[in-house]
Length: 293
Image (cartoon, rainbow, N blue to C red; front, side, top):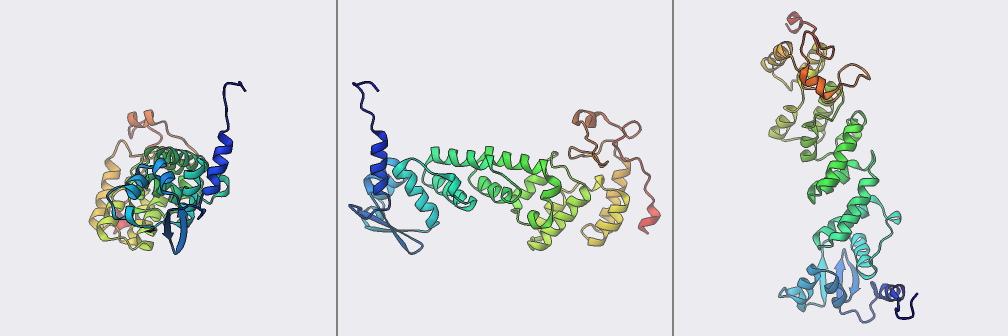
């Protein structure tokens, strides 16, 4: 180190860290879920425009020594640590706590922290957390993180539609997911998953209808339409007949990225050019209308 430069940042951070949630010289107390958490107005205001307005602005809280907040107490503690030290150890945090802290970072305007947490979540997405991460990403309008979640779901569609995972997806996220051409699973399995979601979540009629309308019934076989879809009464007889008639006439089917044939990947460019007479991925089985009678 040059003799003309003094670098003692580590000492400063360590000393500031000692003030975090320390009642010594604290001039404001946050009451969160019944817990009293002391803080220092000047530090919070220096680190956040939100706290500057809250603690030194025209709001009534600027005159109060105790301020009640309706937030997660654990997330608030983590946020205080970040405010006083500029660091967080995410390895020690549960996904739920990270998501709660992300919401606070968004609410209180800690953009750098928000970006860091979103980046971390994008790297730890898995089958057990993708739905809850996606929901938070959508609520906070985190486009990149939402896209990462949807891409993960695309690649694990068959597993995602299993009831114990699929039914926890929020309606808005499910609606967007069903619109994706890249969400590739057998359409009859997607239908069963959607039907199970609607029943489990007691979906309102208009929402259920919108979800069922995103199911690509023409990708199902004749037997699946008659034996699976018809038994649920989701489609009235006339609508079911219309689907079967439409299926017979279509030359280009609305594939979701893979064909109905096991382990056969369909090139999206070929799908756009295929026709019923030459394309091996199209269904050319004639419908036996007598089976519906």
